[in-house]
Every structure is written in C-alpha cells, then in structure tokens.
Image 1 (cartoon, helix red, strand yellow):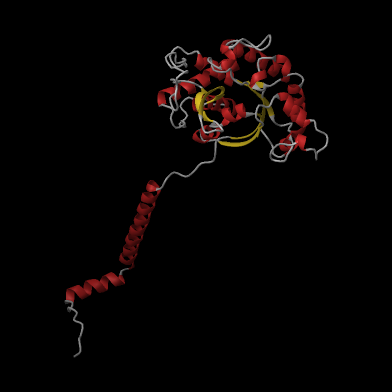
Image 2 (cartoon, rainbow, N blue to C red):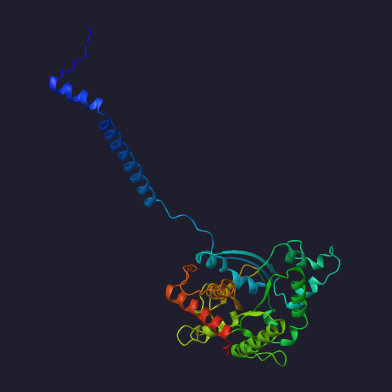
Length: 347
C-alpha cells in the first residue's frame, strides 16, 4: 500500500498573498529582524539568569603579611588563631614560626652567633639557622620576645635583644621588627602562692605584669620597634569586673578525684588539669603560664590588629567553645590594648 501525503489546496486568495509576501523584500527583512531580536532576547535572558544564580567571583586577599616569629611556646599560643582571623578578614598570612620550648632572647642570640654553619648548635629543628631563615623569604615582620620566667627582669633582655635586632637588619633589612609582649601568669599560679625564690621576683600577677610591661616597652624603645601588647590585653581581661577569672574557693583540692576540676570560667590560662603519671595514676596539676583557647584567641586578636592594621572587633572567626558575648569581649579587649599602646596611653 502506498501512502500519499495530503496537503490542503490553497485558495486563489491565499496563494496570491503568499506570493506577494515572498516577492516583497521589506517583509522578508522584517521577519528576519523579528527572529533575530527574539534570539537575542532569549540569549540575554539566559545569561542574566545564570549570572544571578552563580556565586560571586572570588576576590584576591586585601593584604598579605609574611611573618617570621622567633620565640617559644608563648608565641605559638598567641599565633594559633592568627591565620583563621586573617582569612575571616579577607587577608592572607604567610607564617614561619621558630619555636624552642622555654627559649629566651639569650638562647636565640647565642644560636645565631654560631660561626660554624655545620655546627648543629646553631640550627633549629628544621635544620636551618636563624640567618638562613631570615634570608629565605622577603619577610614583612620579624618578632622576638623574652622567656616568660625572665620577662620581668629588664637586664635579661640585654644585650641579646640588640644582637637579634642587628642580625635581623643584616639578613632581612626590609622587615619591621616587632617585640611580642608576653603575659603575666594566672593569679593563682603556684609562683604567687609561695615566697619569691630570690629578690626582685614578682609576688603577684599584678606585680609581674607591671614589671614585664615596663621591661618590654623599655627594650622596644631601645630597639626602635613596636610592641605587640598581648600582655596588656591579658591584664585588662584578667582585671575586668565582669569577665575576669576568679579562683574557685569552694573546690576541695585535698580530696579531689579525677575528672573533677574547680570552676575555671573566664580563665585565659590552661589552669588546673589532670595528668596521667607513668604508673597510670592521675595527678592534678596546674599550668598557670600557658594560654588556653580564650587566651590564644585574645592574643591572636592583638596580633591581627598590629599586623593587618584593622580592628578585630566584628571579625567573623570565633574558636569552638567560645560563646559569642565572650568572644566579643575578647575582641574589644584586644582593640583597647592596641589602641592604648598606639596612642601612648599606657597604664
């Protein structure tokens, strides 16, 4: 069977109209123009919808800071959250830490003055010397600090701080020298419970803060360097009427069993903790020196303001476990410390 397509016949009028349209060049152009405009509108509409739905393009960091820290566990504490704060602020941090536990200015200066490059006494854990690390990158800032146990004694800074400054100038002349002001120990640290071991040792948290603050500012003036006032921020927080730490007078240390701990709300220091002994038993110990999460965040906010030149107040990064209101207080305290230091309003 053969199938034939059936087309309706055009009437005489219809045929004449079609033929007229084909022969009229203006009508042909008009139809083509309408079709072209329709295509353009369709394409534009799709492009507009796609652009509206797509995420915003990633912008480059506002500021990049290259930082070399010459310190110890206190510099590690204070910079733990610095990178997080920088990212939240839209910046980039390139950080190389030199950390030796308990290291003083004297230790770092002595290592730097080792003349034999093959002598491991002048090298750090990464196998490089201070001079090599200073020359390894174009640093924007290099920081130094004193060991916390010696921070109250100005004479322990000399001549080692000056020696380190001279080495930094020689091997990283473009870098700005900053002096990291460490903080006083917690008010109930064992150091403040017993009598001082030798004359001149601070007997209270306030005495330790006052002496270290004066020593750091004196040495910074001698070096022509700026202070990173973390110690100021700690003392502001530790003496705040609402947010400061208060020792738990109701806790019975004599009969305490793990994992019970005293109330350490608002502490900036590690404080009391249970530690496992070699025989497997637990012993309650105190670390009133090092910073806990809150202290590390406070220190990081101070460093952020000094390095990036903008307020930490309102920064979107908050470490886990820090409630928003307390985080805001720590940000504001860091800002107060930096503002006070930069305006010369020192306590």
